[in-house]
Length: 411
Image (cartoon, rainbow, N blue to C red; front, side, top):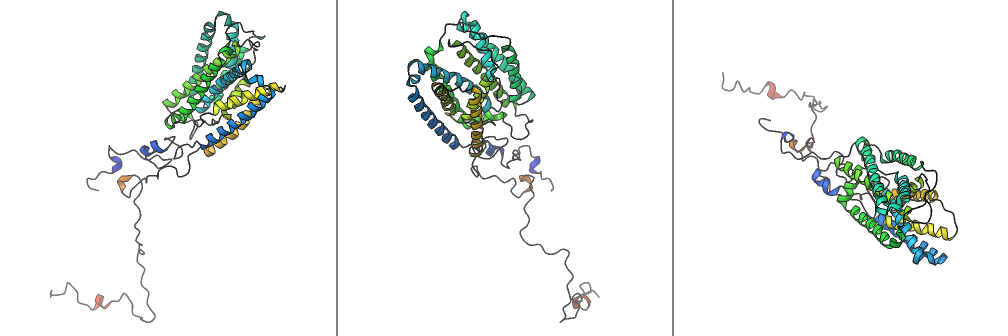
């Protein structure tokens, strides 16, 4: 041992391999979607492509059925109304999907949309900007308060947002009657532009979410071991931004609803909107566990459900948002199972694991490999006498009768 220094005591030593994988951090950063924990390899997107093709096929079939039942719904005023319905549902789906991606789903989106709609319907005669400004500010502050509870206490987003939803419902129930919109702004005049804007946000968000680095950052809040383990400052900041953005998007959806001079805004709890929004996000291919999601799924799922509701209305069917949301969540949970099973890294997709040691003491804590040569018995066994030679094998003549070295030439 002398003056030698063991490698684990050297100041410039490389970091130890990650215990969960046995791969050094430099390799983890390149081959893991979650470098701290998780499976080697990168998420696969083939399952999202297949599912989005199925959504597109279903949308085509429903659009054809609607055209055959009521062609006026796909042109002129009917088309503008349909597009605006898609924008309202799309904003709610984006609000739910954004927080689902961060693994902190916001269940207050429905009540927030109803509260914003009531406020804008009451204050619409003061102008769209004067009515929308305070509502957006309150929504942002409420989302920030919700985010602080989630990230500071490190509690599940669904539980904290459910408490927030209850608080918003108390505000909604202060009104005993429906409110007739007072403003003169008609969003249906710009329905096409609003729809294009929603589609661009949905698709671009999906494209950014497909980038490994972005997906890794967005999904940092997703639990990987003990749910009580904090996921770091980056996860807290990203999750807070998602919750604030989700609340603002829900308020925008409510404002568009209140600006359509088609019916009074009823002081409903709005939880049916939450169920429908979460169902749309899951139906789009967003995993209920967070991080994983597709590119065109939100746009296709929103259009599919919008056309379905229009077709049901054209046929004279009474369809509840609760029913549609429940079916969407049920199908979406099956999609989550598929996304998690077939979207996970493929077996053997990562680089070969780097061994923890190379046989030297300084390479790590791994003991050096054993000598491949066979080791004889120790202590040695006493030799046996052979029946043919009864002579004691230990009585070698050299021991008794041979010349002794210390006698040679001595006396």
